[in-house]
Amino acid sequence: MSLGEFDLIAKFFTRRVTRAALGVGDDCALFATSPGMQLAVSSDMLVEGRHFLPTVQPARLGHKALAVNLSDLAACGAKPMAFTLALALPRVDEVFLDGFARGLLALADAHGCELVGGDTTQGPLNICITVFGEVPTGQALLRSGAQAGDDLYVSGRLGDARLALEVFRGALALDGAAFEAVRSAMEQPQPRIAFGLALRGLATSAIDVSDGLLGDLGHVLRRSGVGAEVQVDALPRSEVLRALPQHWQRQCTLAGGDDYELVFTAPPQHAARVAAAGLTAQLRVTRIGCISAAPGLRLIDADGRAVVDSFGSFDHFKP
Ligand code: ADP
Ligand code: MG
Image 1 (cartoon, rainbow, N blue to C red):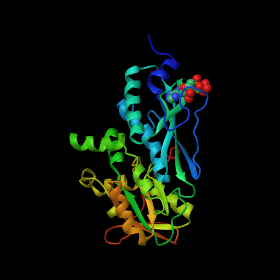
Image 2: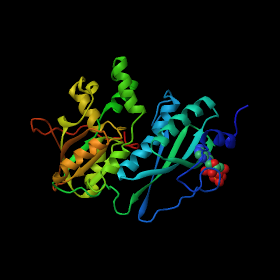
Image 3: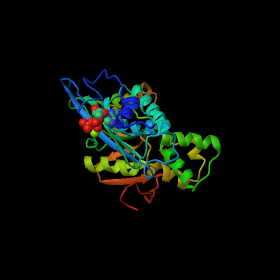
Image 4: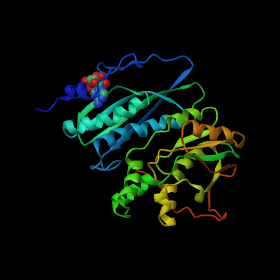
């Protein structure tokens, strides 16, 4: 006999909480708020066919659903505390739920982020998570703080998730090992929490790359009232991506999406501290350009020539 709504919640999603004052089981979860701290809150929804393929392993889906949310806390420099999980399921499939909960809760435990509540309903597979984090008052990393003269950086590597998507779509082919590497970038992104914390008091602005570098950087430039120059040949990318024609390298790094790396700005005098923050978080950090007072985004190749932006970033409501 299949489990009912409340048995399902009890079996897969109810755990003892230690950071929250009250977790799953009542009408609300409760937190004791700390003096001097601000609560950082963010939601992200994953819809089958839109954000993930029906063939993804349940554990990887559970991981990714939380990872994309934690990535927003990372971009804000917030420390994860807790999350809620709103879930629509077509049916009670215990094999799916077991894998999903395993992937989800393993990442939650790795970041000390507790599941404190949610909602469960029947419907097309849809996962909506809200994360709660904390940051000392006034220290959150915002999109609005970039200054002319700042260096522009990105963590990790860009483009592999988009590359994997293009292989799934049949636009490109990769051999087994190469495909597994980029597939894991797409299905199991690592939220840059430790790095986000290390950037507090150092970065003047930050954003996580979810829709593609150009689009997400555009948000920072608009909110900060500045422009930028980006060196397209300096963008960090995998050996797998480097082996492809230049067009694909640029498309995937500039407008790939689903990268969940941090793009941020810092004044040149902080360059050594930025490098040290990367070492602390065991993360590659690459300077990819600089911020200018003149508005707009200019793309430059290794020879200093202008590159035409024909890439376009992801927008759910645009073709
Ligand atoms: P309510 O009707 O008051 O919203 P529910 O009966 O829907 O509460 O849920 C019972 C409890 O289980 C609540 O504490 C709710 O937060 C929690 N819950 C429901 N679905 C989930 C889920 N997918 N993961 C974690 N907790 C959940
Ligand atoms: Mg409910």
